Image (cartoon, rainbow, N blue to C red):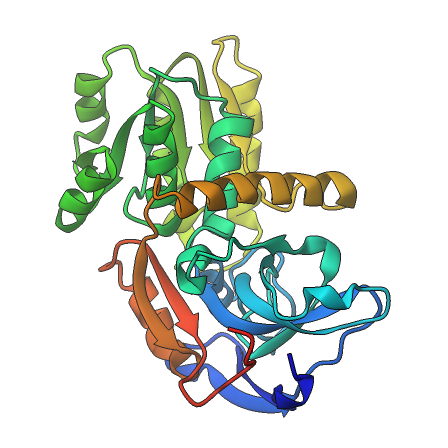
Length: 356
């Protein structure tokens, strides 16, 4: 690839403070240069997840100080490499967890955190299962260790993580009950789950009708008081995996308090002599042990990519929206009207590379 064709300035989306989606700012800056051990990825796709929705409210647990560029994960082509990095990587497509920074035309990242994307996969399709796929796979297979023939309850089964989790579970021969708004029930049913209205006052009773002895695992991104029902719906030996506090997203006050209260509650339940397990899932757990963290990242996302490539699971792309219209993308993701993940893609005139 002729690196002279790579843009020397890039567009990025900046979150300047606690703002409505319309308050996002589009800025242009010089293209990043990779340090030793880094590459520069040219953006092909970046997702709009619940993390960014919380960040714009100043409510994400460990977000950086404003202003910053959001973007929890991305897929892109290697444009430049730093010292010590094989130049053969240039022109190849990789996925990466970024936590922040992904909503930009080019991003400098450590090479050891990259996961190669199979060549036959579309970038936006692959992006739907980066953070969502890692989260779903690890919660299902590493944390809850659900087995074929068991039954699980997935809250938000139409969402990015939920829709991926449903597909991974059904592929493994696991029965899935999925909560969602009634307008999403057909989509949830098509993924292989039995849908229930998450707003139904008798939701626990309806779950019990389908699983009289309780479920083997509950995957709950909601938190709040509803976490009590999630725990009570477990059968003996079952596992509650909590991975968010969506119920408190509009609460004022500390961004950390709802998470800490939730973790405290889960810890106390873990001490009860009832055979039930609880776990608060954090995708970044083990990051200090970088070798183990990155090995698991590559292994787990590689498995999900393989299932996506062979058609076992279907990418749930809610919309593809140009980077310069990030405000529109964020509003759509927050609307609750879509199934799957809203994806940001480069603007038509923004050529980050000629590699693909």
